[in-house]
Image 1: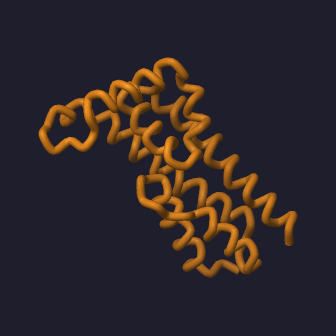
Image 2: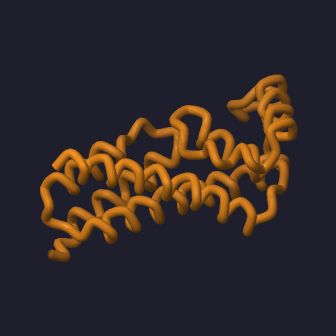
Length: 145
C-alpha cells in the first residue's frame, strides 16, 4: 500500500516539526500507524528523513547567523545567544542527542551550526536522536495495537 499522500503529509509534518512551527509529526505518525495502510518502516524512514533534513537547514542557518546577528531586525538578543552558546560549549556535541526534545532541540541544532559543529558528526548524532524517537514511538504504538 503505497498511497503517496500519507507519506507526503508525514514528510511535510516532520519537516515542519523540525522548525519552530508547532507541528505534531508524532500524532500524524501514530495515526498512520494505527490506520495500518502504510509500511511501518517506510513511515518511520519518511518521518526521520523529514525531521533530520529540517535540522540540517537549522544547522546551515546557524552557520550563517554570524553574518547577520548584529542587524537591527535580528530576533535573538546577544544575551540569549551567549547563553545558548555557553550551554552548547559546556554540554558539547553530545547535547545533540537531545535534538529530538521539543522546545530545546531546534535551537540546539541552530547553535550547533553557529559554533561550526562538523557536518558529519552533526548529521550522525541528530539522525541517531531523531530516528530513535520515531522508532520508540512506532514500537509503542504497534505494541498497543
